[in-house]
Length: 258
Length: 163
Image (tube, rainbow over all chains, first blue to last red; front, side):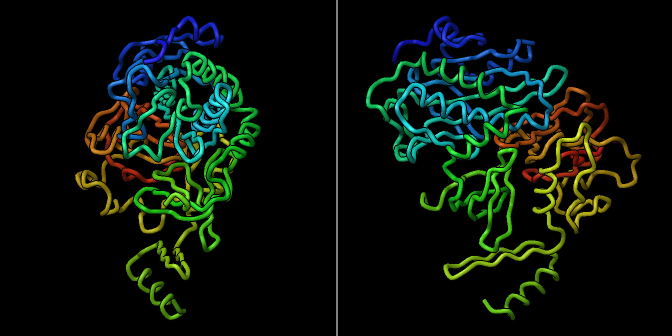
């Protein structure tokens, strides 16, 4: 275990955020969600040293050893129209990639739509849940591998951590603060400014221009990624020249990864 | 694959009401589509500026007129009485993928015959890995499920029929 996360230190480095650090939770998303339902204001960041039931996409589990990495969930109450809420993924993936580069001399790329990679290995994933109702809110969950050095064999070639990339332990407080500060900056482009953020996302895209396979519903789609469109959706061009716009896909793999 | 074979496939697609065919081998690939250009339509829709209020959604794909509940739809739909008084519908607030439960294998949020109110979660619409928990926002009883689990939905598309 590295130095514990200290909420005051993080708050001092990330103005505008209220930070709560828990020792062990089922998932930081669950905690942030129940705080949201209790009426907690936006810009609340929940972190935990250990997570017993962290969530990935739908039922995927996110592996998180104690005290090494960052499990962060932030509570947001966006004022933008609801149909623009899915833009959050694009903005948050960008913010995460930038935060990683703020603290480590690496190049972080975005694998559409919600993962951040260093080289050909995943370092960070994010997932958001919205709760509509009288006072709607979004919980954005970010899992970032900071100091995990050993991954289970099935992940060894697929996952990395900041510490593995730089070869030494990486203090987590500055990483958490960088994430929050970059989020503040990029979430300001949710409505006006989104196109500008997208330009940077395209520059960091791992998939743009590449041939990929992905699962959409029960089909496998195959084609070249022609564009990330004005909403950050992926435009796939099939061999016959026809296109398909994806807002959702699973098991997205560039051909070279097969 | 020569023209005769392609023609055969087209005939088979028409005979069996298949709308999409994709075939791929090392020496080439072919994609055949019948009916409306749903992809083109959905791309067009996604390019429209966001309207202030829900607009009419894209017409349902051919072969699935809403009056004749598709046989392939969830079995629960079969229990819905056909000529019931038609109430309001619950619409999708966004483009995305429709899920009836919180995770694969979990119980659906609601079934035909369930009462809902403003705060009842009825489904999840996933777009760009944002899981949007959709509330009924009206009171009523679920009469029909209009979309199958895991299928794409458009902005403003009716998801559930109430009575």
